Image (tube, rainbow, N blue to C red; front, top):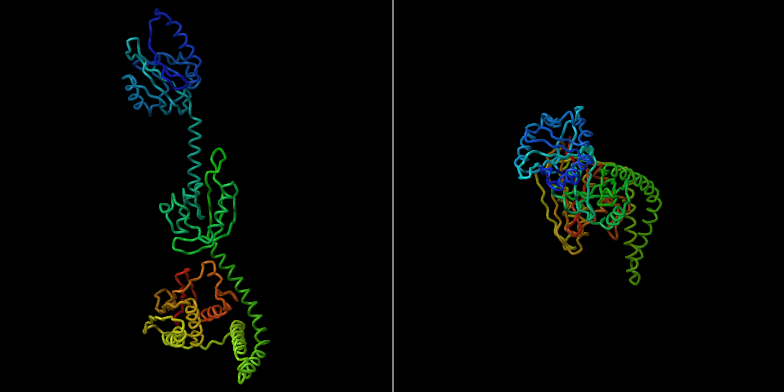
Length: 493
Protein backbone atom coordinates (compact mmCIF):
# COMPACT_ATOMS: atom_id res chain seq x y z
CA UNK A 1 0.00 0.00 0.00
CA UNK A 2 1.13 3.61 -0.59
CA UNK A 3 0.94 6.41 1.94
CA UNK A 4 0.38 10.09 1.09
CA UNK A 5 4.09 10.65 0.52
CA UNK A 6 4.21 7.90 -2.12
CA UNK A 7 5.99 5.49 0.23
CA UNK A 8 5.23 1.81 -0.37
CA UNK A 9 3.49 0.11 2.53
CA UNK A 10 4.47 -3.54 2.41
CA UNK A 11 0.93 -4.81 2.78
CA UNK A 12 0.61 -8.48 3.64
CA UNK A 13 -2.47 -10.49 4.51
CA UNK A 14 -1.90 -11.77 8.06
CA UNK A 15 -3.53 -14.30 10.32
CA UNK A 16 -5.76 -12.45 12.76
CA UNK A 17 -4.68 -14.78 15.59
CA UNK A 18 -1.07 -13.63 15.37
CA UNK A 19 0.00 -11.29 18.19
CA UNK A 20 -0.44 -7.55 17.47
CA UNK A 21 -2.09 -8.24 14.10
CA UNK A 22 -5.37 -6.75 15.23
CA UNK A 23 -3.57 -3.52 16.14
CA UNK A 24 -1.85 -3.41 12.78
CA UNK A 25 -5.11 -3.95 10.95
CA UNK A 26 -6.69 -1.13 12.93
CA UNK A 27 -3.83 1.19 11.95
CA UNK A 28 -4.16 0.23 8.31
CA UNK A 29 -7.91 0.69 8.41
CA UNK A 30 -7.50 4.11 10.01
CA UNK A 31 -5.01 5.06 7.32
CA UNK A 32 -7.40 3.96 4.56
CA UNK A 33 -10.32 5.85 6.05
CA UNK A 34 -8.48 9.12 6.60
CA UNK A 35 -6.12 9.26 3.63
CA UNK A 36 -6.63 12.25 1.33
CA UNK A 37 -5.64 10.05 -1.61
CA UNK A 38 -8.05 7.65 -3.28
CA UNK A 39 -7.09 4.05 -2.38
CA UNK A 40 -8.38 0.74 -3.72
CA UNK A 41 -7.48 -2.94 -3.63
CA UNK A 42 -8.36 -5.64 -6.17
CA UNK A 43 -7.72 -9.38 -6.30
CA UNK A 44 -5.82 -11.19 -9.04
CA UNK A 45 -8.97 -11.25 -11.16
CA UNK A 46 -9.05 -7.48 -10.73
CA UNK A 47 -12.29 -7.51 -8.73
CA UNK A 48 -12.58 -4.73 -6.17
CA UNK A 49 -11.97 -5.82 -2.59
CA UNK A 50 -11.95 -2.41 -0.94
CA UNK A 51 -12.02 1.33 -1.58
CA UNK A 52 -11.68 4.22 0.84
CA UNK A 53 -13.83 7.37 1.35
CA UNK A 54 -11.39 9.50 -0.66
CA UNK A 55 -11.98 7.13 -3.62
CA UNK A 56 -15.75 7.61 -3.26
CA UNK A 57 -15.33 11.40 -3.05
CA UNK A 58 -13.02 11.58 -6.07
CA UNK A 59 -14.72 9.19 -8.48
CA UNK A 60 -18.35 9.23 -7.26
CA UNK A 61 -18.92 5.48 -6.73
CA UNK A 62 -19.71 4.17 -3.25
CA UNK A 63 -18.11 0.97 -2.00
CA UNK A 64 -21.32 -1.09 -2.36
CA UNK A 65 -21.47 -0.27 -6.08
CA UNK A 66 -18.00 -1.55 -6.91
CA UNK A 67 -17.22 -4.41 -4.50
CA UNK A 68 -16.72 -7.68 -6.34
CA UNK A 69 -16.74 -5.91 -9.70
CA UNK A 70 -14.00 -4.77 -12.00
CA UNK A 71 -12.55 -1.37 -11.26
CA UNK A 72 -14.83 1.10 -13.12
CA UNK A 73 -12.41 4.03 -13.25
CA UNK A 74 -10.35 2.85 -16.26
CA UNK A 75 -11.43 4.50 -19.58
CA UNK A 76 -11.93 2.16 -22.54
CA UNK A 77 -9.15 3.80 -24.54
CA UNK A 78 -6.67 2.90 -21.76
CA UNK A 79 -7.89 -0.68 -21.14
CA UNK A 80 -5.13 -2.39 -23.15
CA UNK A 81 -2.42 -0.26 -21.55
CA UNK A 82 -3.75 -0.96 -18.05
CA UNK A 83 -3.94 -4.72 -18.74
CA UNK A 84 -0.21 -4.76 -19.54
CA UNK A 85 0.53 -2.65 -16.48
CA UNK A 86 -1.50 -4.92 -14.18
CA UNK A 87 0.40 -7.95 -15.48
CA UNK A 88 3.64 -6.26 -14.40
CA UNK A 89 2.21 -5.56 -10.93
CA UNK A 90 1.02 -9.18 -10.58
CA UNK A 91 4.58 -10.21 -11.45
CA UNK A 92 5.77 -8.30 -8.38
CA UNK A 93 6.72 -4.91 -9.82
CA UNK A 94 5.56 -1.52 -8.53
CA UNK A 95 4.72 1.67 -10.40
CA UNK A 96 5.13 5.07 -8.75
CA UNK A 97 4.10 8.56 -9.92
CA UNK A 98 2.29 7.20 -12.99
CA UNK A 99 0.41 10.09 -14.63
CA UNK A 100 -2.68 8.99 -16.53
CA UNK A 101 -6.40 9.62 -16.90
CA UNK A 102 -9.31 8.06 -15.03
CA UNK A 103 -13.07 8.27 -15.52
CA UNK A 104 -15.57 9.36 -12.85
CA UNK A 105 -19.09 8.12 -12.20
CA UNK A 106 -20.51 11.15 -14.03
CA UNK A 107 -18.38 10.46 -17.12
CA UNK A 108 -15.78 13.15 -16.47
CA UNK A 109 -12.18 12.37 -17.32
CA UNK A 110 -9.65 13.55 -14.76
CA UNK A 111 -5.85 13.53 -14.67
CA UNK A 112 -4.33 11.57 -11.79
CA UNK A 113 -0.92 10.65 -10.44
CA UNK A 114 -1.13 6.98 -9.43
CA UNK A 115 0.97 4.39 -7.65
CA UNK A 116 0.32 0.65 -8.07
CA UNK A 117 1.82 -2.06 -5.85
CA UNK A 118 1.43 -5.84 -5.41
CA UNK A 119 -0.41 -7.16 -2.32
CA UNK A 120 1.30 -10.24 -0.81
CA UNK A 121 0.28 -12.89 1.71
CA UNK A 122 2.47 -14.03 4.57
CA UNK A 123 4.31 -16.36 2.21
CA UNK A 124 5.20 -13.40 -0.02
CA UNK A 125 2.89 -14.52 -2.82
CA UNK A 126 1.12 -11.81 -4.81
CA UNK A 127 -2.60 -12.11 -4.15
CA UNK A 128 -3.84 -8.76 -5.44
CA UNK A 129 -3.08 -5.17 -6.43
CA UNK A 130 -3.36 -2.01 -4.36
CA UNK A 131 -3.60 1.42 -5.93
CA UNK A 132 -3.56 5.00 -4.77
CA UNK A 133 -4.02 8.20 -6.75
CA UNK A 134 -4.59 11.88 -6.37
CA UNK A 135 -6.29 14.35 -8.69
CA UNK A 136 -3.76 16.48 -10.61
CA UNK A 137 -6.26 17.95 -13.09
CA UNK A 138 -5.66 21.45 -11.77
CA UNK A 139 -1.92 21.00 -12.32
CA UNK A 140 -2.52 19.71 -15.84
CA UNK A 141 -4.83 22.64 -16.55
CA UNK A 142 -2.15 25.03 -15.34
CA UNK A 143 0.44 23.25 -17.47
CA UNK A 144 -1.87 23.39 -20.48
CA UNK A 145 -2.59 27.09 -19.92
CA UNK A 146 1.14 27.69 -19.54
CA UNK A 147 1.80 25.73 -22.73
CA UNK A 148 -0.82 27.72 -24.64
CA UNK A 149 0.51 30.99 -23.26
CA UNK A 150 4.03 29.99 -24.25
CA UNK A 151 2.84 29.02 -27.74
CA UNK A 152 1.02 32.34 -28.09
CA UNK A 153 4.09 34.27 -26.96
CA UNK A 154 6.29 32.23 -29.30
CA UNK A 155 3.86 32.96 -32.15
CA UNK A 156 3.90 36.68 -31.33
CA UNK A 157 7.70 36.70 -31.22
CA UNK A 158 7.99 34.55 -34.35
CA UNK A 159 5.54 36.63 -36.40
CA UNK A 160 6.43 40.07 -35.05
CA UNK A 161 7.54 42.59 -37.66
CA UNK A 162 9.93 44.03 -35.06
CA UNK A 163 13.30 42.46 -34.34
CA UNK A 164 13.24 40.79 -30.92
CA UNK A 165 16.07 39.34 -28.84
CA UNK A 166 16.55 37.90 -25.36
CA UNK A 167 19.85 37.86 -23.45
CA UNK A 168 20.95 36.68 -20.00
CA UNK A 169 22.66 38.80 -17.34
CA UNK A 170 26.03 38.14 -18.98
CA UNK A 171 24.51 39.55 -22.19
CA UNK A 172 24.73 36.25 -24.05
CA UNK A 173 21.98 35.75 -26.61
CA UNK A 174 19.29 33.25 -25.62
CA UNK A 175 16.86 33.79 -28.49
CA UNK A 176 16.18 35.96 -31.53
CA UNK A 177 13.21 36.00 -33.89
CA UNK A 178 13.01 35.81 -37.71
CA UNK A 179 12.56 39.59 -37.98
CA UNK A 180 15.93 40.01 -36.21
CA UNK A 181 17.54 37.66 -38.73
CA UNK A 182 15.95 39.55 -41.64
CA UNK A 183 16.92 43.00 -40.33
CA UNK A 184 20.49 42.37 -39.17
CA UNK A 185 21.52 39.36 -41.27
CA UNK A 186 22.66 36.97 -38.52
CA UNK A 187 20.89 33.63 -38.04
CA UNK A 188 19.94 32.38 -34.59
CA UNK A 189 22.57 29.63 -34.78
CA UNK A 190 25.26 32.29 -35.32
CA UNK A 191 24.45 34.38 -32.25
CA UNK A 192 22.97 32.11 -29.54
CA UNK A 193 25.36 31.89 -26.59
CA UNK A 194 27.39 34.86 -27.82
CA UNK A 195 27.32 38.58 -27.11
CA UNK A 196 24.88 40.62 -29.17
CA UNK A 197 26.77 41.55 -32.37
CA UNK A 198 24.60 44.50 -33.43
CA UNK A 199 26.17 47.18 -31.22
CA UNK A 200 28.70 49.46 -33.03
CA UNK A 201 32.04 50.00 -31.30
CA UNK A 202 31.52 53.75 -30.98
CA UNK A 203 28.35 53.12 -28.92
CA UNK A 204 29.73 50.39 -26.64
CA UNK A 205 30.20 52.63 -23.57
CA UNK A 206 26.75 54.17 -23.93
CA UNK A 207 25.12 50.75 -24.32
CA UNK A 208 27.05 49.38 -21.33
CA UNK A 209 25.60 52.10 -19.08
CA UNK A 210 22.14 51.51 -20.53
CA UNK A 211 22.33 47.76 -19.95
CA UNK A 212 23.30 48.34 -16.30
CA UNK A 213 20.11 50.38 -15.86
CA UNK A 214 18.03 47.58 -17.42
CA UNK A 215 19.65 44.97 -15.15
CA UNK A 216 18.72 47.21 -12.21
CA UNK A 217 15.07 46.87 -13.21
CA UNK A 218 14.48 49.94 -15.35
CA UNK A 219 12.97 49.94 -18.84
CA UNK A 220 13.77 52.05 -21.87
CA UNK A 221 11.17 52.76 -24.56
CA UNK A 222 11.41 54.56 -27.89
CA UNK A 223 15.20 54.77 -27.65
CA UNK A 224 16.52 55.99 -31.02
CA UNK A 225 20.03 54.85 -31.80
CA UNK A 226 22.17 53.10 -34.41
CA UNK A 227 22.88 49.41 -34.85
CA UNK A 228 25.23 47.55 -37.18
CA UNK A 229 24.22 44.79 -39.60
CA UNK A 230 26.20 41.70 -40.55
CA UNK A 231 27.24 43.34 -43.84
CA UNK A 232 28.65 46.35 -41.96
CA UNK A 233 25.77 48.76 -42.70
CA UNK A 234 24.72 51.15 -39.96
CA UNK A 235 20.98 51.58 -39.56
CA UNK A 236 18.84 53.78 -37.34
CA UNK A 237 16.45 51.94 -35.02
CA UNK A 238 13.84 52.73 -32.42
CA UNK A 239 14.43 50.27 -29.57
CA UNK A 240 12.71 49.17 -26.38
CA UNK A 241 14.65 47.37 -23.64
CA UNK A 242 13.01 45.67 -20.65
CA UNK A 243 14.18 43.47 -17.77
CA UNK A 244 13.13 39.80 -17.74
CA UNK A 245 12.18 38.50 -14.28
CA UNK A 246 11.67 35.04 -12.79
CA UNK A 247 8.71 34.02 -10.61
CA UNK A 248 10.41 35.62 -7.60
CA UNK A 249 10.64 38.96 -9.39
CA UNK A 250 14.41 38.74 -9.77
CA UNK A 251 15.95 40.12 -12.96
CA UNK A 252 17.48 37.19 -14.88
CA UNK A 253 18.08 38.89 -18.22
CA UNK A 254 16.57 41.45 -20.54
CA UNK A 255 14.65 41.56 -23.78
CA UNK A 256 14.93 44.02 -26.61
CA UNK A 257 12.81 44.96 -29.58
CA UNK A 258 13.58 47.39 -32.35
CA UNK A 259 12.38 48.52 -35.74
CA UNK A 260 14.27 50.09 -38.61
CA UNK A 261 13.65 53.85 -38.82
CA UNK A 262 16.44 54.58 -41.29
CA UNK A 263 13.98 55.78 -43.93
CA UNK A 264 12.36 58.15 -41.42
CA UNK A 265 15.79 59.42 -40.42
CA UNK A 266 16.75 59.93 -44.05
CA UNK A 267 13.55 61.90 -44.59
CA UNK A 268 14.23 63.99 -41.49
CA UNK A 269 17.83 64.58 -42.52
CA UNK A 270 16.74 65.44 -46.06
CA UNK A 271 14.29 67.98 -44.67
CA UNK A 272 16.97 69.44 -42.39
CA UNK A 273 19.46 69.49 -45.24
CA UNK A 274 16.91 71.17 -47.50
CA UNK A 275 16.34 73.82 -44.85
CA UNK A 276 20.10 74.27 -44.46
CA UNK A 277 20.49 74.56 -48.21
CA UNK A 278 17.72 77.13 -48.35
CA UNK A 279 19.32 79.16 -45.58
CA UNK A 280 22.77 78.72 -47.13
CA UNK A 281 21.42 79.83 -50.48
CA UNK A 282 19.86 82.95 -49.03
CA UNK A 283 23.03 83.75 -47.11
CA UNK A 284 25.19 83.00 -50.11
CA UNK A 285 23.27 85.30 -52.41
CA UNK A 286 23.52 88.26 -50.07
CA UNK A 287 27.02 87.50 -48.83
CA UNK A 288 28.56 86.92 -52.24
CA UNK A 289 27.27 90.12 -53.78
CA UNK A 290 28.23 92.20 -50.74
CA UNK A 291 31.85 91.07 -50.44
CA UNK A 292 32.94 89.93 -53.88
CA UNK A 293 33.60 93.39 -55.27
CA UNK A 294 35.61 94.59 -52.23
CA UNK A 295 37.55 91.30 -52.32
CA UNK A 296 38.48 91.83 -55.94
CA UNK A 297 39.73 95.34 -55.19
CA UNK A 298 41.69 94.20 -52.12
CA UNK A 299 43.32 91.36 -53.99
CA UNK A 300 44.35 93.69 -56.81
CA UNK A 301 45.95 96.19 -54.44
CA UNK A 302 47.81 93.39 -52.59
CA UNK A 303 49.24 92.18 -55.88
CA UNK A 304 50.38 95.73 -56.73
CA UNK A 305 51.97 96.18 -53.29
CA UNK A 306 54.07 93.02 -53.75
CA UNK A 307 56.13 94.76 -56.44
CA UNK A 308 59.27 96.30 -54.87
CA UNK A 309 58.25 95.57 -51.27
CA UNK A 310 60.56 92.68 -50.36
CA UNK A 311 60.30 93.29 -46.60
CA UNK A 312 56.51 92.89 -46.64
CA UNK A 313 56.34 90.21 -49.34
CA UNK A 314 55.82 87.25 -46.98
CA UNK A 315 52.95 89.05 -45.21
CA UNK A 316 51.39 90.05 -48.49
CA UNK A 317 51.63 86.46 -49.75
CA UNK A 318 49.72 85.25 -46.70
CA UNK A 319 47.13 87.99 -47.22
CA UNK A 320 46.75 87.06 -50.88
CA UNK A 321 46.38 83.36 -49.99
CA UNK A 322 43.64 84.09 -47.49
CA UNK A 323 41.88 86.44 -49.90
CA UNK A 324 42.00 83.68 -52.54
CA UNK A 325 40.46 81.30 -50.03
CA UNK A 326 37.63 83.73 -49.30
CA UNK A 327 37.16 84.20 -53.04
CA UNK A 328 36.87 80.41 -53.47
CA UNK A 329 34.25 80.21 -50.73
CA UNK A 330 32.27 83.01 -52.33
CA UNK A 331 32.42 81.27 -55.72
CA UNK A 332 31.15 78.03 -54.22
CA UNK A 333 28.40 79.86 -52.37
CA UNK A 334 27.31 81.42 -55.65
CA UNK A 335 27.06 77.96 -57.23
CA UNK A 336 24.72 76.94 -54.43
CA UNK A 337 22.74 80.16 -54.40
CA UNK A 338 22.09 80.56 -58.12
CA UNK A 339 20.48 78.01 -60.42
CA UNK A 340 23.14 76.94 -62.90
CA UNK A 341 22.43 77.12 -66.59
CA UNK A 342 23.40 73.62 -67.67
CA UNK A 343 24.71 73.31 -71.21
CA UNK A 344 24.30 69.57 -71.65
CA UNK A 345 25.89 67.90 -74.64
CA UNK A 346 26.31 64.26 -75.54
CA UNK A 347 29.93 63.55 -74.71
CA UNK A 348 32.44 60.79 -74.11
CA UNK A 349 32.83 60.37 -70.34
CA UNK A 350 36.21 58.65 -70.71
CA UNK A 351 37.62 61.75 -72.45
CA UNK A 352 36.38 63.94 -69.61
CA UNK A 353 38.00 61.65 -67.04
CA UNK A 354 41.31 61.61 -68.95
CA UNK A 355 41.30 65.44 -68.93
CA UNK A 356 40.71 65.31 -65.16
CA UNK A 357 43.64 62.91 -64.71
CA UNK A 358 45.92 65.21 -66.69
CA UNK A 359 44.89 68.22 -64.59
CA UNK A 360 45.37 66.29 -61.32
CA UNK A 361 48.68 64.65 -62.21
CA UNK A 362 50.95 67.45 -60.97
CA UNK A 363 49.29 67.70 -57.57
CA UNK A 364 49.45 63.89 -57.20
CA UNK A 365 53.19 63.78 -57.96
CA UNK A 366 53.89 66.57 -55.46
CA UNK A 367 52.18 64.52 -52.73
CA UNK A 368 53.81 61.19 -53.68
CA UNK A 369 50.48 59.78 -54.89
CA UNK A 370 49.99 57.46 -57.86
CA UNK A 371 46.76 57.53 -59.85
CA UNK A 372 45.82 54.22 -61.47
CA UNK A 373 42.94 54.37 -63.92
CA UNK A 374 40.87 51.55 -65.40
CA UNK A 375 38.72 53.21 -68.04
CA UNK A 376 36.86 51.20 -70.68
CA UNK A 377 37.11 52.94 -74.05
CA UNK A 378 33.81 51.48 -75.26
CA UNK A 379 31.65 53.17 -72.63
CA UNK A 380 28.56 54.82 -74.15
CA UNK A 381 28.30 58.60 -74.29
CA UNK A 382 26.24 60.55 -71.76
CA UNK A 383 24.39 63.86 -71.71
CA UNK A 384 26.36 66.20 -69.46
CA UNK A 385 27.95 69.57 -68.81
CA UNK A 386 31.61 68.57 -69.16
CA UNK A 387 32.94 71.56 -67.20
CA UNK A 388 30.74 70.75 -64.23
CA UNK A 389 31.71 67.06 -64.27
CA UNK A 390 35.39 68.02 -64.45
CA UNK A 391 34.87 70.17 -61.37
CA UNK A 392 33.26 67.21 -59.56
CA UNK A 393 35.98 64.65 -60.30
CA UNK A 394 38.85 67.10 -59.74
CA UNK A 395 37.34 67.78 -56.33
CA UNK A 396 37.10 64.05 -55.49
CA UNK A 397 40.70 63.36 -56.60
CA UNK A 398 41.91 66.40 -54.64
CA UNK A 399 40.14 65.07 -51.52
CA UNK A 400 41.70 61.62 -52.06
CA UNK A 401 45.20 63.12 -52.36
CA UNK A 402 44.72 65.17 -49.18
CA UNK A 403 43.52 62.02 -47.35
CA UNK A 404 46.94 60.39 -47.94
CA UNK A 405 49.54 62.75 -46.40
CA UNK A 406 52.20 60.01 -46.62
CA UNK A 407 51.40 59.14 -50.21
CA UNK A 408 49.58 56.15 -51.64
CA UNK A 409 47.53 54.99 -54.60
CA UNK A 410 44.24 56.30 -55.97
CA UNK A 411 42.22 53.85 -58.07
CA UNK A 412 39.82 55.33 -60.62
CA UNK A 413 37.46 53.17 -62.66
CA UNK A 414 34.41 53.60 -64.86
CA UNK A 415 32.11 50.76 -65.84
CA UNK A 416 28.69 50.17 -67.33
CA UNK A 417 26.18 48.62 -64.92
CA UNK A 418 23.46 46.47 -66.43
CA UNK A 419 20.15 47.20 -64.73
CA UNK A 420 16.56 48.13 -65.55
CA UNK A 421 17.91 51.64 -66.11
CA UNK A 422 21.51 51.26 -67.37
CA UNK A 423 24.00 53.62 -65.78
CA UNK A 424 27.72 54.25 -65.55
CA UNK A 425 29.50 54.02 -62.22
CA UNK A 426 32.64 56.10 -61.72
CA UNK A 427 34.63 55.04 -58.65
CA UNK A 428 37.40 57.01 -56.90
CA UNK A 429 39.07 54.91 -54.21
CA UNK A 430 41.92 56.00 -51.95
CA UNK A 431 44.09 54.35 -49.29
CA UNK A 432 43.84 57.25 -46.88
CA UNK A 433 42.94 57.76 -43.25
CA UNK A 434 39.25 57.04 -43.77
CA UNK A 435 36.21 58.71 -42.25
CA UNK A 436 34.49 57.53 -39.02
CA UNK A 437 31.01 56.09 -39.58
CA UNK A 438 29.35 58.73 -37.40
CA UNK A 439 30.74 61.48 -39.69
CA UNK A 440 29.67 59.93 -43.00
CA UNK A 441 26.01 60.91 -42.63
CA UNK A 442 26.97 64.59 -42.27
CA UNK A 443 29.09 64.80 -45.43
CA UNK A 444 27.60 67.28 -47.87
CA UNK A 445 26.14 69.54 -45.22
CA UNK A 446 27.05 73.25 -45.47
CA UNK A 447 30.31 74.06 -43.68
CA UNK A 448 30.67 70.49 -42.33
CA UNK A 449 34.15 69.17 -43.10
CA UNK A 450 36.68 66.65 -41.77
CA UNK A 451 39.61 68.68 -43.14
CA UNK A 452 41.41 71.35 -41.13
CA UNK A 453 41.21 73.90 -43.96
CA UNK A 454 38.03 72.70 -45.64
CA UNK A 455 34.75 74.55 -46.01
CA UNK A 456 32.38 71.64 -46.51
CA UNK A 457 31.08 73.37 -49.62
CA UNK A 458 33.11 71.47 -52.24
CA UNK A 459 31.29 68.19 -51.63
CA UNK A 460 28.01 70.04 -51.38
CA UNK A 461 28.58 71.64 -54.79
CA UNK A 462 29.64 68.29 -56.27
CA UNK A 463 26.53 66.61 -54.95
CA UNK A 464 24.35 69.35 -56.40
CA UNK A 465 26.02 68.98 -59.81
CA UNK A 466 25.59 65.18 -59.78
CA UNK A 467 21.92 65.49 -58.86
CA UNK A 468 21.56 68.04 -61.67
CA UNK A 469 22.77 65.27 -64.00
CA UNK A 470 20.06 62.93 -62.63
CA UNK A 471 22.78 60.92 -60.91
CA UNK A 472 23.53 59.96 -57.34
CA UNK A 473 26.52 59.94 -55.02
CA UNK A 474 27.51 57.20 -52.55
CA UNK A 475 30.43 57.43 -50.11
CA UNK A 476 31.71 54.52 -48.03
CA UNK A 477 34.70 54.62 -45.73
CA UNK A 478 36.61 52.65 -43.12
CA UNK A 479 39.01 54.27 -40.69
CA UNK A 480 42.58 53.28 -41.51
CA UNK A 481 41.58 51.62 -44.79
CA UNK A 482 40.41 54.48 -47.00
CA UNK A 483 37.37 55.98 -48.69
CA UNK A 484 35.42 54.99 -51.79
CA UNK A 485 33.37 57.54 -53.74
CA UNK A 486 30.88 56.15 -56.27
CA UNK A 487 29.16 58.42 -58.79
CA UNK A 488 26.27 56.93 -60.77
CA UNK A 489 25.28 58.71 -63.99
CA UNK A 490 22.34 57.59 -66.18
CA UNK A 491 22.59 56.91 -69.90
CA UNK A 492 20.54 59.00 -72.33
CA UNK A 493 16.93 57.86 -72.75
